[in-house]
Image (tube, rainbow, N blue to C red; front, side, top):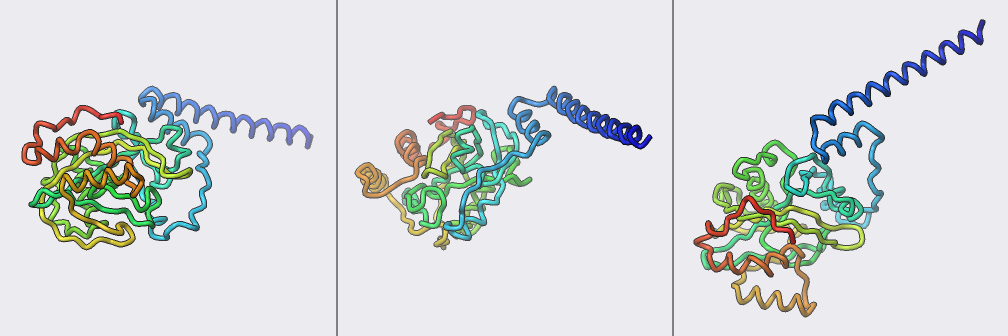
Length: 279
């Protein structure tokens, strides 16, 4: 009798487990009918076993910059449609980038009243492209309600305002989002080293204004305003390996920047919100 009771309980447990598994599979199948392919991939991962992220030793990295790796970036597909969120750390690991992980970003080009462009040199504490010269400010909108908002690209503009203050100490009231001109988007991928890299659709934002600066040395080790000729000299030095520039800034400078700069007061002709430039 004891053996019969034990066998019955075991059969009941197995049946309950089977029912639970079938219910989960049914839910996944039902949800699949209503989701795009990238969203279904993310959903499948959540309903199945947890994804193991690569173990990366960050003990040798700057403590403040490591804390920022926990920020949640906006995951997108190749057409810049939102599909989820992931940490800044996971978004910038080459092992994930090689699998197609893509996130939203922006690049600000700030000019003063003399039409000189503000450049920064990234601090050596930065995890990607430390010590490289680049445009005024480059970062990511976060997966928050205010920066996810897409009407008039207001979320990206708010993120730019936030990072201009965080990196360069520009008072928020001096760079209101509505005064930023959103030109277009570029899609690029680049490795910083064997572990870290970038894979972004980058919103290009232009602004002309005299602002107060108080850079954070943890973000920026130097900054300067340059004329077109001075920037050309800097780019030539980079070609001679005398200094380094970020890959996104190099791509933009080699293609669009000087044409846009020549028409700083007539940028409307270059606004293209439909196209994503694959670079």
